[in-house]
Amino acid sequence: MSSVIEYTMRVKPGQYETVMEAYVDFADRFGESNPTEDLILVTGDPTAGVIRGIGVFTSGDEALDVVSAGMFVDFRDSVADLLAELPVRVDLDLVHVFVK
Image (cartoon, rainbow, N blue to C red):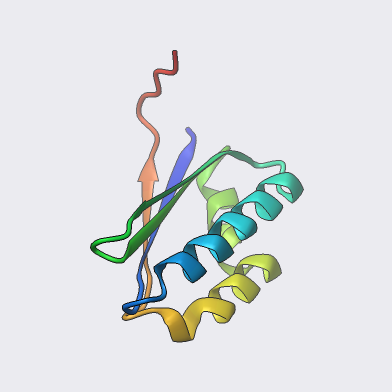
């Protein structure tokens, strides 16, 4: 079964655009270099200062590998001082997808 990772960051006031730009750049580079990630979505709410990344992976094991992937660690470290709190990672099972 495919696995979904939801990674939520709450940014400090005034840092939304900077963190969003860094996240989109990371997501593009990571997606290009990682064959086990089928889909990456980055969503945001600038008013609330919330940025959320959603990645769909072939399996749960491959999703777990991301936590220690060098590119992810570098991204996480690069934005750490811009976040209001520690990011939250949630592991989910992909149950259904409809794309038109």
